[in-house]
Image (tube, rainbow, N blue to C red; front, side, top):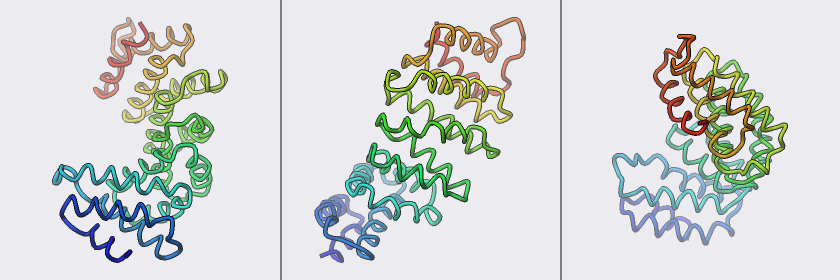
Length: 257
């Protein structure tokens, strides 16, 4: 039966692929060892599909994410092993799979981050934290704070982005006031980062802190003053030279007024 379902996944027909995914969803609980890993890899292979070339298969990609997420934590070691051999498109989908697991993914991801040796793997894990829509993800904040000081700008960029995503998904009263202050202070510090991408993500996340009720009045005032500087609207004439940073500041400004 497994071979037949895997053949269906290799089809170019949308309905045939969906049929194979439905069958695997029912079969997965019975699979173990090499058969389980082969099925996971077969579903993950769908993530190599380029939705720009095949927009009709976008529902297939979403269904594949859900089928894998249904397998919960037992699938995480297999997904992490696949990182070194998969492309960027696949990474985005694998992170989405982990995000769909919610709280169950937090501890395995924290452990994986602590043992990760490659920067690319750490970036992936940080991005995955930003996909988790469960209050348990707050436990990842110390890791995100550490990553925001990393020598690799892509690590700092992704960590700064993830802090803002937490603000989207977790209500501020679920986050300790001390942690909220550290979120603000760490992001403000990144506004002087030498890399524009990092600065832009910090501005975006600060805007989300303001938008979703994470900031105290004095913090809003401090942020408003910083945004005015970035946009060249104060007397300092020391605006940020990067357009992408100014664009994020203009968006964030509406939430601090």
